[in-house]
View 1: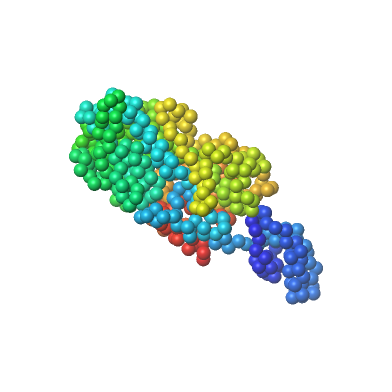
View 2: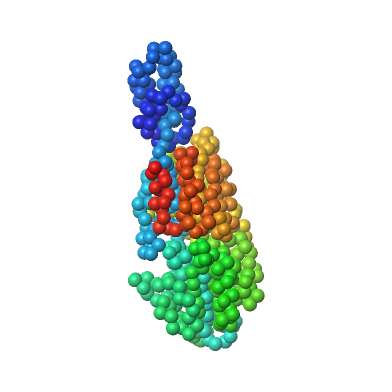
Length: 453
């Protein structure tokens, strides 16, 4: 961690004992001695000896007592990329809050295309039994997580693009929910078409809605379970496929209705329960390499705290041998963002993904505490009830924090209000770094305002 000369000088002038608060930084021994000499001239002669000792200690410690302002501490946004929830435009002020600010997520568009392709491939491979009522229409319903979330938008577009039901809006596929559309008259989507074995089938989005509960929490599994209950009672025989923006909602619908009615359900996240359910008829899911994301979330902070190249242990092997290959992540320098790549999980390979909390073996080696000493991190999960984050992502983080010598305080939000989280960041000065998972992507300023105080 780079030291600030002004802070170091003040520390000596105040006669504080020089205690290490970080690692790394440049050697400033000569400057330390000059500062100590200036202080000597201001102190009583009786204190000269002790002042000289303090100066010597300061030189030996490389000025490590210097404190870092909260606004300059390493910061990683994760899972929710700072952006405009209406336009999707990235909030570059938040992404470049300081020199050690980054985002960690996954390649949403690549994953969305994978999910859409997975559903289309399943339909084509099972066309002889997929049309449950034999009406020549492959009907699907879609659970939308959050209409203002870029990842949710991408997944909705990925399904509609693959199935040919997308309608262009403002230069891209419309991602709006449609309510119900059993007659094919909705303007936000259109009927698609799939031809298999010389026979053509209509593909129709029968219904879609944002799964938002009465308290305002999005990606809500219980709301999705209620929705499939309503849809199935109204037009259940027409539902041939269920698609969901995530596994939490997908599994709620699967357990509530589609499992018993043998309707394949497709989700996203590769949560352990969803992967296991593939053996019981769950159609498939997408692994967004949470094991890689969780590692990157903490590794970027570790590198910044150590003052080493940000690529250490990521694209370039560290001294312990930790390194990621370029087929599991990409880095966008302009966006200051690390993106994990996605993998489709189906009946062909699901046995390889049954433990979603297992750390990624290529980055599983312990760091040396002498070179990467213990540091304290404040990290929040936007909703403690979110299945993916609480059951997959956080356990992975907790597995990695020991390896990376980080003491992490995990804060669980309610998924509804930013203040439920920010109210528990009352003393940022006690932390060395921060990892933030917002409730809404627009609200980065709620956090940076606290760090700027």
